[in-house]
Image (cartoon, rainbow, N blue to C red; front, side, top):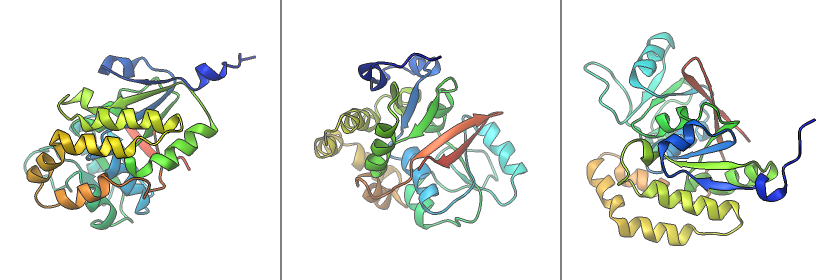
Length: 234
């Protein structure tokens, strides 16, 4: 018979400070790659996609692309000559692609962060857009939780992931830190950098990324044989 954890241990929330923490975590893991992966995955589910998959590395995603008929590939990475794919754009995922087709995702930071949580009881994806829905889901079933800022897996200068992680910790404890987090992200200069680097959809992506609560999807990822199958936990 399993022992019931006391409330303070059930609700323990930790923010990962290095990638190694995720690989040994056995509770609930929540991945935040704010500007791209998190919002793109939520948007794919929100758009009505029924088959969404996540891959840690390009070779696995490209193999799946060959095997899955009519699949769309979402990535900001250079996947080699002749590989057609959508950018890792939340706006494109929500409004600019066919929701009837399977969607495959491989990214610099978000998908490796999710794949690192192989020992976790549950892998969820969070962003400002699904904060209320995700918090409601987690509070119904409290578990020790590790919030994983995906910047740990690629570039620590992407401070928006850590800022969002701190705001999520507050959200899960019943406090609204979104306004302060939004101000901090704007002050960092990262929003302007992103829009300059992504002129085609950057502005429209940011209009979605920096809104709270407009998506109801709570992506849950289950990895099997290298493929992360995404479902809506709610």
